[in-house]
Picture (tube, helix red, strand yellow):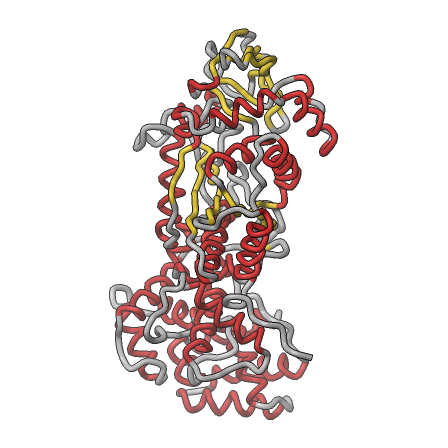
Length: 531
């Protein structure tokens, strides 16, 4: 049986890009520019999940270009969204602005023109630091400038049909009684609390009542105002159930990924795009949300976020891209504790890429190379970088004298034969690892399952360290402990390194233990063994 052919660079990004192109060809649409979109929330701090949508979509853009098509990413900021609750870490007085459009709320930190501008700057800073290239589009500006006017008119003119379809698809009857549009109340200046009752297409006017609405688990009272608003003046917005479709049509979007929690909204928007706006919806890729280590959804209000800026304090942009591109299927539990894993995994991919190795499995070989290429955003270096296990750097930085961390770590690595000397790349890695080691709330290394023989050998080695006078004695103690427990060196040393460094490899054990401190190494080993 012939092996399957490799699509593009062999990753899921390439498969999605090819399926997008094939669908466009079937639809008969021109492929002069295959535009992808990513929605950016603007009501709370950006986190890995929210920014991840844009990073993934940018990867699909690169994959489309790999297939020979011009592409761009539109980053659409929903900065006309209403504030639903006060996020953790924000001042309590923001409760007075719940349900106000975030673009019209003062910046709580007094450094930007509005709440939305403050949060939006954090989003863009995150994308810029990761290296994502995009065309930014403000939602409030889209409404104010009339970019969505044609779509609004068509949607409101077919509101009865849309309301019936929403009820049919997801069992929600709300839009059979009100239009899928929410004006900003003329009196209380809030959004979502208004219910649009009717639309006059000749005057472009929506009649509404400020009745109140349920936000989350609370009902927010309206002010009772009744009036009219002209939809072309930018003082109202489409509801999520139809707004995606309007954007896809207005900006000619051909691909958009979405989180699992938006499945119903996307189903409705697909129908609206196709049957009301006459614009086939974009090709989709669905992903599940990132969770914290306890399995809880990352939330702006709960405050359990891992932010891109925080990740990049301790690690490279390439490691964060790898986190996004490694796979798209299944939920992911993520924390800052994972930084060493992704730093080391990226190094392994780079080692493979620049080696002359070739996996006999054509698909696996292509995937490893493609994953590396997308993790560097196709900006391929001429040679590989410095590769030192991340936890080794962090532990050496932890015992280094204050004010001479880089000098100490470079000297020890040189002694181990792992580097020839200092370099800008190594200095950067040492600084990341030093900060990671000294951060608040750091956890212990997760110890992999160990055999009884490995446990016995490690316990014997830990107890023998006290009597070891130098590096050679430590090395001898390691071999003796392994031998007594019937363990081969090839099984013993990876077990030691997995506990001390979170890796299956490391420097020569004797010199490293003397540098890290015999008592500290013994403590770590015995703690991992539950002794």
